[in-house]
Length: 404
Image 1 (cartoon, one colour):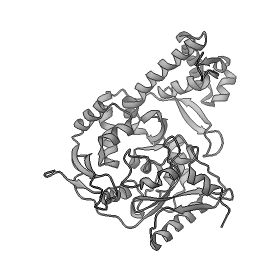
Image 2 (cartoon, one colour):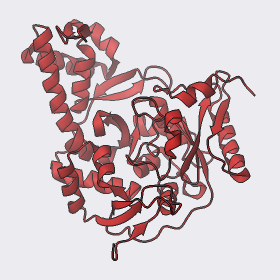
Image 3 (cartoon, one colour):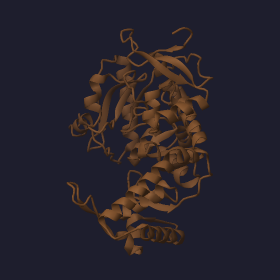
C-alpha cells in the first residue's frame, strides 16, 4: 500500500476509548459534552440517551439532571429525526446540518407517502392536510406544549382515520395523528419536548420548533461527515453510507469536501490472522498515532452510539456473539465492554439488580472493573426500572434471572 497509513484494530479501539469518552481519564463533565463528542445519541428508546450519558460522565455529575437541563432548559441538545429515519439526540449547533443534509429530504418523502396513503384510503387531500397542520400549529402556539392525545382532544380532525393499504394483506384502519405529527416534526415545525412522566417515558409533549438557518445540502453533508469522522474515524465508505443513509455518491463528494485521506484499516480482531485490510478514511489532521488509554470497562445501553457506530463491527465485536446481543432487526442490546471490545451483555432484573454475563475470558482485572461498573450502574438507577424497547436474547435471559 506504499505510504498509506495502516491503523490496526488495537489503535481503532484506543481511539474509541478516548473519543467516545469511555476511558476513565476521558470522561465528560456535561451531557452537552457527551452529545458533541458522539455526534448523535440514538433517541428511539428515551432511556438509552440517559444511560449513554451516564456511562460517560465523571463522578459527581448527576446524569438525569444533566440531560434534562441540556434538552429542556439551556437547549444545548435537541431530539430530532436524523440519519436513517431514526430519532437522535444531538448538539443543537449541529441540527441545521442534520436537517439540511438528511432530515429535510426524508421529510419530503414522508409527506409524499402520507398524501399517497390518504388519497388511497380516505377522502382527505393536500388542502385537508394543510388545514389540519395549521390547526396543530395554532393550538401549540396557544398551549406552549401538548401531548398527541391532548392535541387530538382539541382538534377533532386530528383523530380522523384512513384505511392503510386498501386491498392488500396489511390493510388496516389508522389514525392520521401520528403521521401528521411525524411529518411536522421531520420538517422541524414542531419538536419533542419533555416526556409525559419520567425520563424513561416515550410519550413526549410537542412544542413549536425554531426554524433552522438555511444551509446548502452539500455543505451540510460535509459538515456532518467531518464531525462524524472526527469522532469515529477511520471509517470505510460502507460505514459512512450506512450511518448517514446517503447515496454513495453523496458520501464520496462529502469525503472530498473535507479533504479526507485514505488509510488502510484492520476490520477484524487485530490478532495478525485476519488479513482483511480495507480502505478507510480519516480527516487530514488525524493521521498521527493514538496512544492506548488506561484499561477501562463500561456497561453501555441498548442502541448506544458506540455499539451502533459502524457497519463493520468485527474489530470490536466477535461475530460469534451477534446472535446473543442483537435482535432480528439489527438493534443491539445492552453490552459489556473491556478496552474497546464488546465482551458480554447485561440486563436489569425486576428487583433492580444488574446482571451481566461475559462471553469472553477477559481475566481477573477486567472482571473486577466490570463488576465495579455494574455496581455503579445499579446504585445510580436505584428504584428506576429500565427495559430496552428492542429486546435481545441475552438481555431477556439475564433480565429474567433470579437474584444471586
